[in-house]
Amino acid sequence: MQIGAAMFFTDYSMAPTELGRALEERGFESMWAPEHSHIPLSRKSPFPSGGELPKQYYDAMDPFVTLSVAAAATKKLKLGTGVCLVIQRDTIQTAKAVASLDQVSGGRFLFGIGGGWNQDEMEDHGTVYATRFKKMREQIEAMREIWTKSKPEYHGETVDFPPTMTWPKPVQNPLPVIVGGAFPHGARRALRYGNGWIPHSRRPQYEDVTDFLPQFRQMAAEAGRDPAEVPVTVWGAPENADRLQHYRDQAVARVVVSLPAEPAAKTLPRLDRWAELIRHIGH
Image: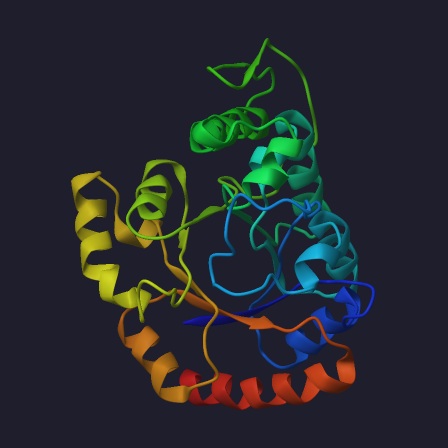
Protein backbone atom coordinates (compact mmCIF):
# COMPACT_ATOMS: atom_id res chain seq x y z
CA MET A 1 0.00 0.00 0.00
CA GLN A 2 1.35 3.40 -1.04
CA ILE A 3 1.03 6.57 1.04
CA GLY A 4 0.57 10.04 -0.38
CA ALA A 5 -0.01 13.49 1.07
CA ALA A 6 -2.19 16.42 0.01
CA MET A 7 -2.05 20.10 0.83
CA PHE A 8 -3.98 23.19 -0.21
CA PHE A 9 -1.03 25.24 -1.45
CA THR A 10 -1.48 28.87 -0.50
CA ASP A 11 0.72 31.92 0.02
CA TYR A 12 1.05 30.92 3.70
CA SER A 13 1.53 27.15 3.34
CA MET A 14 4.70 25.15 2.83
CA ALA A 15 5.85 25.66 -0.77
CA PRO A 16 5.13 22.81 -3.21
CA THR A 17 8.80 22.48 -4.09
CA GLU A 18 9.75 22.20 -0.43
CA LEU A 19 6.95 19.79 0.42
CA GLY A 20 7.67 17.64 -2.62
CA ARG A 21 11.29 17.17 -1.64
CA ALA A 22 10.34 16.49 2.00
CA LEU A 23 7.81 13.83 0.97
CA GLU A 24 10.23 12.15 -1.41
CA GLU A 25 12.93 12.02 1.27
CA ARG A 26 10.52 10.37 3.73
CA GLY A 27 9.24 7.61 1.48
CA PHE A 28 5.90 9.03 0.40
CA GLU A 29 4.71 7.83 -2.99
CA SER A 30 2.73 10.86 -4.13
CA MET A 31 1.77 14.50 -3.53
CA TRP A 32 -1.70 15.83 -4.28
CA ALA A 33 -3.00 19.36 -4.85
CA PRO A 34 -6.72 20.17 -4.41
CA GLU A 35 -8.48 22.85 -6.42
CA HIS A 36 -11.04 25.61 -6.03
CA SER A 37 -11.04 28.47 -8.51
CA HIS A 38 -12.92 30.75 -6.09
CA ILE A 39 -15.58 30.57 -3.39
CA PRO A 40 -18.73 32.64 -4.04
CA LEU A 41 -20.15 34.47 -1.05
CA SER A 42 -23.54 32.86 -1.67
CA ARG A 43 -23.90 29.23 -0.64
CA LYS A 44 -26.47 26.87 -2.14
CA SER A 45 -24.44 23.80 -1.16
CA PRO A 46 -23.32 22.89 2.38
CA PHE A 47 -19.71 21.93 3.04
CA PRO A 48 -19.70 18.08 2.81
CA SER A 49 -17.64 17.67 5.99
CA GLY A 50 -20.00 19.91 7.92
CA GLY A 51 -19.35 23.17 9.73
CA GLU A 52 -17.70 26.28 8.34
CA LEU A 53 -15.65 26.14 5.16
CA PRO A 54 -11.92 26.28 6.09
CA LYS A 55 -9.97 29.34 4.94
CA GLN A 56 -7.64 27.28 2.72
CA TYR A 57 -10.53 26.59 0.33
CA TYR A 58 -10.69 30.30 -0.51
CA ASP A 59 -6.94 30.61 -0.93
CA ALA A 60 -5.88 27.56 -2.99
CA MET A 61 -3.37 28.05 -5.79
CA ASP A 62 -3.83 26.50 -9.22
CA PRO A 63 -2.85 22.80 -8.99
CA PHE A 64 -1.18 22.60 -12.41
CA VAL A 65 1.19 25.42 -11.45
CA THR A 66 2.08 23.98 -8.03
CA LEU A 67 2.51 20.43 -9.32
CA SER A 68 4.69 21.62 -12.20
CA VAL A 69 7.19 23.31 -9.90
CA ALA A 70 7.11 20.25 -7.64
CA ALA A 71 7.88 18.05 -10.65
CA ALA A 72 11.02 20.09 -11.30
CA ALA A 73 12.13 19.70 -7.66
CA THR A 74 11.63 15.92 -7.39
CA LYS A 75 12.66 12.76 -9.24
CA LYS A 76 10.33 9.90 -8.30
CA LEU A 77 7.39 11.42 -6.46
CA LYS A 78 4.08 11.03 -8.26
CA LEU A 79 2.03 14.19 -8.60
CA GLY A 80 -1.76 14.22 -8.48
CA THR A 81 -4.70 16.57 -8.62
CA GLY A 82 -6.85 15.83 -5.61
CA VAL A 83 -9.19 16.60 -7.22
CA CYS A 84 -9.28 18.65 -10.41
CA LEU A 85 -12.73 20.16 -10.92
CA VAL A 86 -12.81 19.42 -14.63
CA ILE A 87 -16.41 20.58 -14.99
CA GLN A 88 -15.17 24.11 -14.26
CA ARG A 89 -12.45 23.90 -16.92
CA ASP A 90 -12.28 23.97 -20.70
CA THR A 91 -11.92 20.41 -22.01
CA ILE A 92 -9.35 20.95 -24.76
CA GLN A 93 -7.16 23.30 -22.71
CA THR A 94 -7.24 20.97 -19.70
CA ALA A 95 -6.27 18.00 -21.87
CA LYS A 96 -3.21 19.98 -22.96
CA ALA A 97 -2.34 20.97 -19.38
CA VAL A 98 -2.57 17.34 -18.25
CA ALA A 99 -0.43 16.05 -21.12
CA SER A 100 2.11 18.83 -20.61
CA LEU A 101 2.45 18.08 -16.89
CA ASP A 102 2.82 14.36 -17.61
CA GLN A 103 5.59 15.21 -20.09
CA VAL A 104 7.55 17.60 -17.86
CA SER A 105 7.29 15.18 -14.91
CA GLY A 106 8.46 12.21 -16.96
CA GLY A 107 5.16 10.33 -16.68
CA ARG A 108 4.50 10.90 -12.98
CA PHE A 109 1.07 12.57 -13.15
CA LEU A 110 -2.08 11.15 -11.54
CA PHE A 111 -5.23 12.86 -12.85
CA GLY A 112 -7.62 12.89 -9.91
CA ILE A 113 -10.96 14.35 -10.97
CA GLY A 114 -14.29 15.20 -9.39
CA GLY A 115 -17.59 16.89 -10.09
CA GLY A 116 -17.36 19.15 -7.06
CA TRP A 117 -19.96 20.09 -4.47
CA ASN A 118 -20.16 23.89 -4.59
CA GLN A 119 -23.08 24.71 -6.87
CA ASP A 120 -22.42 28.45 -6.84
CA GLU A 121 -18.77 27.97 -7.81
CA MET A 122 -19.47 25.73 -10.79
CA GLU A 123 -22.37 27.87 -12.03
CA ASP A 124 -20.02 30.86 -12.20
CA HIS A 125 -18.14 28.85 -14.83
CA GLY A 126 -21.30 28.21 -16.84
CA THR A 127 -21.69 24.61 -15.64
CA VAL A 128 -25.23 23.31 -15.15
CA TYR A 129 -25.39 21.70 -11.72
CA ALA A 130 -27.96 19.05 -12.67
CA THR A 131 -25.88 17.71 -15.58
CA ARG A 132 -22.39 18.16 -14.16
CA PHE A 133 -21.60 14.45 -14.03
CA LYS A 134 -22.66 13.88 -17.63
CA LYS A 135 -20.35 16.74 -18.56
CA MET A 136 -17.50 15.22 -16.54
CA ARG A 137 -17.86 11.84 -18.27
CA GLU A 138 -17.93 13.44 -21.71
CA GLN A 139 -14.93 15.61 -20.86
CA ILE A 140 -12.85 12.59 -19.85
CA GLU A 141 -13.95 10.61 -22.90
CA ALA A 142 -12.99 13.57 -25.09
CA MET A 143 -9.65 14.03 -23.33
CA ARG A 144 -8.79 10.37 -23.92
CA GLU A 145 -9.38 10.95 -27.62
CA ILE A 146 -7.08 13.98 -27.52
CA TRP A 147 -4.37 12.09 -25.62
CA THR A 148 -4.37 9.02 -27.87
CA LYS A 149 -5.36 10.12 -31.39
CA SER A 150 -3.45 12.16 -33.94
CA LYS A 151 -6.68 13.75 -35.23
CA PRO A 152 -9.12 13.53 -32.32
CA GLU A 153 -12.76 14.49 -32.44
CA TYR A 154 -15.64 14.11 -30.00
CA HIS A 155 -19.37 14.59 -30.33
CA GLY A 156 -21.40 14.54 -27.12
CA GLU A 157 -24.27 16.48 -25.62
CA THR A 158 -22.10 18.89 -23.62
CA VAL A 159 -18.68 18.44 -25.26
CA ASP A 160 -18.44 18.65 -29.04
CA PHE A 161 -15.55 19.43 -31.36
CA PRO A 162 -14.55 18.45 -34.92
CA PRO A 163 -11.31 16.70 -35.95
CA THR A 164 -8.36 18.64 -34.62
CA MET A 165 -4.64 18.35 -33.97
CA THR A 166 -3.10 18.99 -30.57
CA TRP A 167 0.11 17.98 -28.83
CA PRO A 168 1.85 16.98 -26.62
CA LYS A 169 0.51 13.54 -25.83
CA PRO A 170 1.02 12.16 -22.30
CA VAL A 171 3.98 9.92 -21.53
CA GLN A 172 1.65 7.42 -19.85
CA ASN A 173 -0.79 5.38 -21.92
CA PRO A 174 -3.27 5.07 -20.45
CA LEU A 175 -2.85 8.16 -18.32
CA PRO A 176 -4.46 7.28 -14.95
CA VAL A 177 -7.77 9.04 -14.42
CA ILE A 178 -8.78 8.52 -10.79
CA VAL A 179 -12.40 9.42 -10.11
CA GLY A 180 -13.40 10.97 -6.81
CA GLY A 181 -16.78 10.58 -5.19
CA ALA A 182 -18.76 8.73 -2.56
CA PHE A 183 -20.28 5.27 -2.71
CA PRO A 184 -22.23 4.22 -4.72
CA HIS A 185 -22.40 6.95 -7.38
CA GLY A 186 -18.72 7.91 -7.40
CA ALA A 187 -17.81 4.22 -7.47
CA ARG A 188 -20.02 3.65 -10.51
CA ARG A 189 -18.38 6.55 -12.35
CA ALA A 190 -14.92 5.20 -11.55
CA LEU A 191 -15.88 1.80 -12.91
CA ARG A 192 -17.44 3.29 -16.03
CA TYR A 193 -14.57 5.47 -17.21
CA GLY A 194 -11.81 5.65 -14.58
CA ASN A 195 -8.51 3.98 -13.74
CA GLY A 196 -9.13 4.24 -10.00
CA TRP A 197 -11.55 5.47 -7.34
CA ILE A 198 -10.90 8.10 -4.60
CA PRO A 199 -13.46 8.04 -1.79
CA HIS A 200 -13.07 9.93 1.49
CA SER A 201 -12.06 7.74 4.41
CA ARG A 202 -15.09 8.93 6.37
CA ARG A 203 -18.03 11.25 6.02
CA PRO A 204 -20.89 12.21 8.35
CA GLN A 205 -22.96 9.39 6.80
CA TYR A 206 -20.34 6.63 7.30
CA GLU A 207 -17.41 5.86 9.60
CA ASP A 208 -15.14 3.75 7.36
CA VAL A 209 -15.36 3.70 3.57
CA THR A 210 -13.73 0.27 3.38
CA ASP A 211 -17.02 -1.17 4.65
CA PHE A 212 -18.22 -0.61 1.08
CA LEU A 213 -15.30 -2.37 -0.64
CA PRO A 214 -17.01 -5.79 -0.96
CA GLN A 215 -19.91 -4.08 -2.73
CA PHE A 216 -17.51 -2.07 -4.89
CA ARG A 217 -15.75 -5.22 -6.03
CA GLN A 218 -19.07 -6.87 -6.77
CA MET A 219 -20.03 -3.83 -8.85
CA ALA A 220 -16.71 -4.14 -10.69
CA ALA A 221 -17.42 -7.78 -11.54
CA GLU A 222 -20.90 -6.88 -12.79
CA ALA A 223 -19.40 -4.09 -14.92
CA GLY A 224 -16.80 -6.44 -16.40
CA ARG A 225 -13.93 -4.59 -14.74
CA ASP A 226 -11.04 -6.27 -12.96
CA PRO A 227 -10.83 -4.57 -9.53
CA ALA A 228 -7.05 -4.49 -9.97
CA GLU A 229 -7.60 -2.11 -12.90
CA VAL A 230 -9.60 0.27 -10.67
CA PRO A 231 -7.46 0.54 -7.51
CA VAL A 232 -8.85 2.36 -4.49
CA THR A 233 -7.19 5.45 -3.02
CA VAL A 234 -8.58 6.33 0.43
CA TRP A 235 -8.53 10.10 0.99
CA GLY A 236 -7.99 11.64 4.43
CA ALA A 237 -6.22 8.75 6.13
CA PRO A 238 -5.76 9.15 9.90
CA GLU A 239 -2.37 9.09 11.61
CA ASN A 240 -3.16 5.69 13.12
CA ALA A 241 -1.15 2.51 12.57
CA ASP A 242 -4.07 0.17 13.26
CA ARG A 243 -6.33 1.93 10.79
CA LEU A 244 -3.59 1.97 8.16
CA GLN A 245 -2.99 -1.75 8.68
CA HIS A 246 -6.74 -2.29 8.27
CA TYR A 247 -6.64 -0.43 4.94
CA ARG A 248 -3.72 -2.56 3.83
CA ASP A 249 -5.55 -5.75 4.83
CA GLN A 250 -8.52 -4.53 2.78
CA ALA A 251 -6.24 -4.31 -0.31
CA VAL A 252 -6.46 -0.52 -0.53
CA ALA A 253 -3.85 0.55 -3.09
CA ARG A 254 -3.07 3.97 -1.63
CA VAL A 255 -4.00 6.26 1.24
CA VAL A 256 -3.60 10.02 1.24
CA VAL A 257 -3.15 12.15 4.35
CA SER A 258 -4.62 15.66 4.20
CA LEU A 259 -2.08 18.13 5.58
CA PRO A 260 -3.16 21.53 6.89
CA ALA A 261 -2.05 24.52 4.80
CA GLU A 262 0.79 25.34 7.18
CA PRO A 263 4.45 26.31 6.85
CA ALA A 264 7.38 23.90 7.07
CA ALA A 265 7.97 24.42 10.79
CA LYS A 266 4.59 22.87 11.57
CA THR A 267 4.46 20.41 8.67
CA LEU A 268 7.85 18.67 8.92
CA PRO A 269 7.28 17.18 12.41
CA ARG A 270 3.99 15.74 11.14
CA LEU A 271 5.79 14.25 8.13
CA ASP A 272 8.45 12.71 10.38
CA ARG A 273 5.73 10.88 12.31
CA TRP A 274 4.23 9.66 9.06
CA ALA A 275 7.66 8.46 7.91
CA GLU A 276 7.69 6.15 10.93
CA LEU A 277 4.25 4.84 9.98
CA ILE A 278 5.41 4.27 6.40
CA ARG A 279 8.32 2.17 7.64
CA HIS A 280 5.98 0.28 9.99
CA ILE A 281 3.40 -0.49 7.32
CA GLY A 282 6.10 -1.49 4.86
CA HIS A 283 7.33 -4.34 7.06
